Amino acid sequence: MPRWQLGTAAATSHRPDTAPSRAHHYPASGNPMNIDETIDAFRRGVLDLDCKRIVLRQNREDGERFEGPGHVRQAEDGSLEFKLYAVKLENVKPMGHLGALSKTVAGQLDVDEYFYALTAVGHDGTSWTAARILPTPHWDMRGKSVLVTGKMQSIVACLERSQSNHYLRLSFGDKLEVELASPQRKSPRTQFDPPISPHSIDFYKCGWQLFARYLAYVVAKTEGTHWNPVAYHLYNTCESSANSVDAWAIGITVAVEALASLIHLPNDEAKAQRVSVLQDRIHKWVDEQEDFADLFPRIKGLIDSMGNKRPQDALHALAESGHVDKGYVSSWGELRNRHVHPKLKDLKKPDAIDYQKLLDRIHRMETLLRQLTFYLIGYEGPFTDYGATNFPSKQYPLTE
Image (cartoon, rainbow, N blue to C red; front, side, top):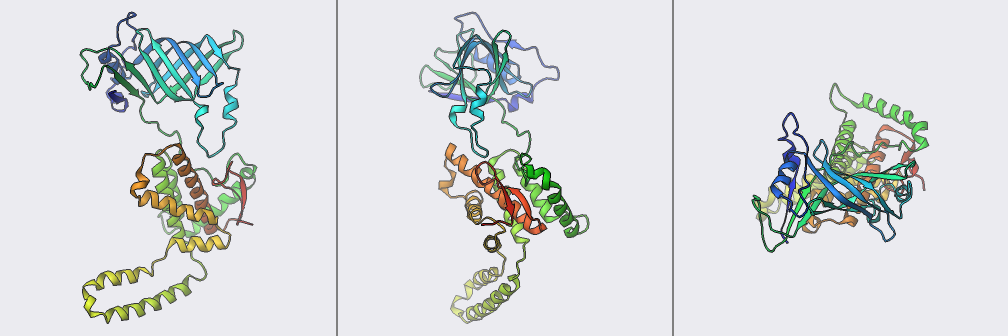
């Protein structure tokens, strides 16, 4: 079955200064939907599908079911939204949808049964479907009527009959599937949470204490008018969390590596001296291997790199002293390697389980980055562990 998709991101940029009147698309019963007219309205951001019947059903056996007339329209930003005037209800109670939402766990993706599927039938008989919807019911308790609204990422029509005069056709049978997709969603805010969750009482008790430590460090460790290195990497991490989860993953692993390089441990100088002695001995031995003279530049480069400070060394040392979570150090390597140096197996199409694992690792890195910051600024006190279930409050430095 052929399928093609049209997004609105480009179409909305061609909307005239004065928006045209919104056109309703409900030709006489029995007349097929005109694809040209529908796509043209969609491109201009004025799509308005008046529906004689909309069914919204929760993805579970005993789930809620709303049915009634309504419409599908485009919002000002080009996204698709629906409005359903429910006249028939099944398994529906006022505020009942909040029961499922109350079972959600902080940091975990919503399970499929929380979502709803929509089927809409237009006045021309065209059937439209949409999935993974989180609706908002509006109750009028006086008349016990329900108005249900919500947004859709895309809506699909499967047409059984032939179409004329449409400008894009790919035929392998007598079915044509048309999908109209909303613009890519934009984050209303960044996803990088504060070191102490605002939902915790510790936020109000110790928030200013933590901020004072951070401010004192930034003032003392910033040269001239330049960025403070810690502030710079925290800012970049926050910005990278605004939209793409992959950009968030890369941004936060780079920040962890950068902050680890700023940490100087008591035995760093002694280790550096031992490495220097070893490098001198290896250089002398290599110079004697004249039959490998063509490889000298590469070998000596490898030898010299031994003196470079590795973030792993600082992270493992801090884990032993209780200043970072030992389990989160290994997660840093997994997340960094997968996104900065991916293998072919890392590039497979992700499913819900993969996304949950990715989100869990990001939350561990978020906590690890905060712990490195605490060590640098000399903070001791409560913090939120975003890498643990339900984001509990813990004490820094870590205790057994």
